[in-house]
Every structure is written in structure tokens, then in C-alpha cells.
Image (cartoon, rainbow, N blue to C red; front, side):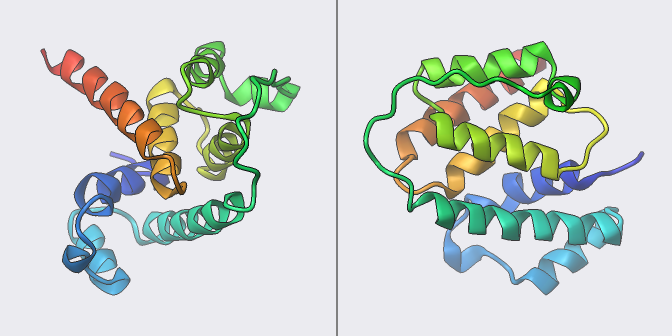
Length: 160
């Protein structure tokens, strides 16, 4: 099975990101555990770089105005359209319409999706990346909770 950066991120997020700060192991311990469970070292390092960049992006977004933005229309470049299917773009638009994403957060999501360097971006990746991005955004607790419900509702629907 070919594990990629997204798989490593998903493992980390599900097992550690949302835990209490006191329960979180250091990066060396996490790297050892990730290697032990079978993730390739190169993908582990890429995942930590992705997360490090995410925290920088999250800090930069704090400088963005907190005024209520109007709904914007996003025109995707041909390269973006090639990597983000109509289903993925439609889902992000849906999230904007219900208030989970705003224009600046949507741009962070798109940037983080492309930073995965995946050959294909599917809807599940979009959902999880939105959840991860919202986790790092200040004052987005309600949007994070909504997205968490949407993601885990879909997981439960597949299980049943």
C-alpha cells in the first residue's frame, strides 16, 4: 500500500491534533511511532512540513479583517480546474454558502490541498483539509464544529 502525506496527516489528526496539549508527544516521538506503524520516512517529513506551513498560514490569517465578508465568486485557473474536480469545487462553494468557509479560508484550503502534491484531489481530501485548516484558524470554533459533524457524519454513513 502506498502511503502518502495525506495519510500521515490523517493519522496525526485523528490520533493527536485534537488531544489536550499535555497528552501530545514531541515530534521525534511521533516520527518514531509513524515509522513503526509503516509510514515512509519521506512522507512523514513532508507531513510535518505541511503542518508547520499550516501554522504559519494560520498565523498570517489572523491579520485578515474580521469584518463579515460578502460571498465572493472564485474563478479557478485551468490548472486548478484540472486538479480540483467539479465535485470538490462545488463542495467548497457549499461550505461558503453555509458559513463554514469564507473567502480567505477557502484560499488557505486550496493552497493546502495543492501543498499535498497529490496526483488527484478527491472530495474526502477536501473535507479533511477543510477540517484541518479550520482547526488552526482563530475564532472559527463554530465552523470547525460544523465541519467536524459533516466529516464524521459521512464516515458513519459509509460504515452503516
